[in-house]
Amino acid sequence: MSGPGIHLPPEDPRTKVVEMIRAPAFFLLCSGVLNVLFNLIGFVLAALKVTSPLAPQGAAATLDLSPGLALMLLVGVLCGVLSAWGAMSALNLKGYGLATVGGITALYILSPACVVGVPVAIWMLFTLRRDGVREAFRS
Image 1 (cartoon, rainbow, N blue to C red):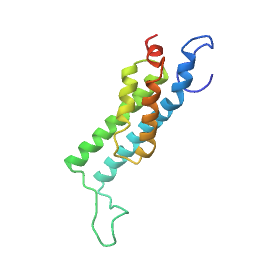
Image 2: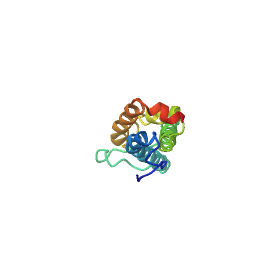
Image 3: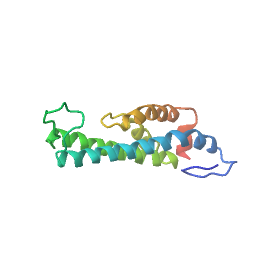
Image 4: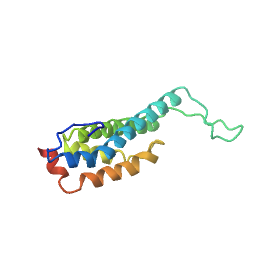
């Protein structure tokens, strides 16, 4: 067995669950990291007052770091961190609740990472609900 996360001997009953959860947890980890990166880039662009490349010619459409935008970006960073933390927890079969919270927080749609985050979060949540997964986290 190869890949990120806990490595168990083949005779361990949790091996099947680890194989089930490894792919969605890894992609959830990637989605959480992307979410953090995109939101931090948003902070930097707003702080530098960069003009949007999507603005019409002649229009002054600069990003301003307003309290509302700062709060949304901060919540996006927090959700990305929780998603990555939940994914690491799932990869090590520690903390079923945290893994579930990680999947739920990946559904927070603010950055372009939602293209990856939403399907992966749904996949992760469905995988966590499969038979025997919760018991594997307990042992």
